[in-house]
Image (cartoon, rainbow, N blue to C red):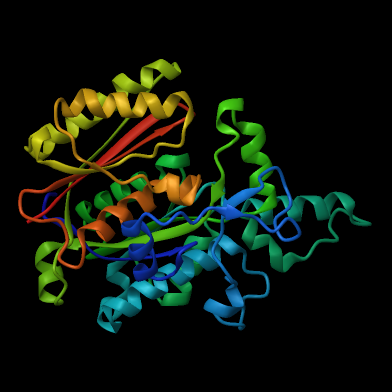
Length: 361
């Protein structure tokens, strides 16, 4: 499995559409969180990070997008940019290309709007049937495949803030099982008033000052030999992904340390080789547990930190996907260097931890 690499990536974020705006924003440490327009984004949060001037009609096209929700538009646009960067040859055999997309609950706005219409209309069935598809979790994944002509296995993954890591792990299993020759994978999340209120009520007092963000990051996962044959230099090898559960908040530290140590052992690399760490770091007690777990696993190593949540806020299902993208953005066009290792971690408040270990050379 160490032969699998990330060979291309793209993103749609509050920095703009495409990988380059994200690279520029992350590497410069530019904070994308700003004061929200209260007319456009009413709700409990006064600050957030939203994609400027973004709409399905603008980036996907006017045809067939009247009822397309924001999360789906983000995902379709991100995959479209990635495919355009790689060229048409990437999908010339569409049956051999898999697609894995991580999401939270699908479009929370679409789900709640549809439910409200069924309760407030003259009859419960007086709803717009064209909007029903946007209420299912796999809407963004299916539309991404349809819009870009991808006919291989199509999977939706949901796992809170760990969703991006879980999608990457599932993409590896799809390839290992012989289901496809390469996989497009990633994660996406939208900003909406409905999501804002759900997040607000679901958080503890200590976490309510963390602003919300949105965006998506997508990657091409393929064998190193296939990447080189297509003229794509591997940006990072996928060395290992690991996940564990914890029962009480103070158990997150031990669980994450065990995850990281298991990943290092599987990859056969030392803690000293870790040059970059991209933690979730959303604040509160769990952020401290995350940092302590990383320190326990890495010992005296002092790698560089990429703190994406400080720049983009809480992007929920897209968070760890954007952390992976940040590692690739910081590595540059040539990717991680020989002998260089990067660690991406996350702690989910519902009781799970996870990590991915990426290597260069």
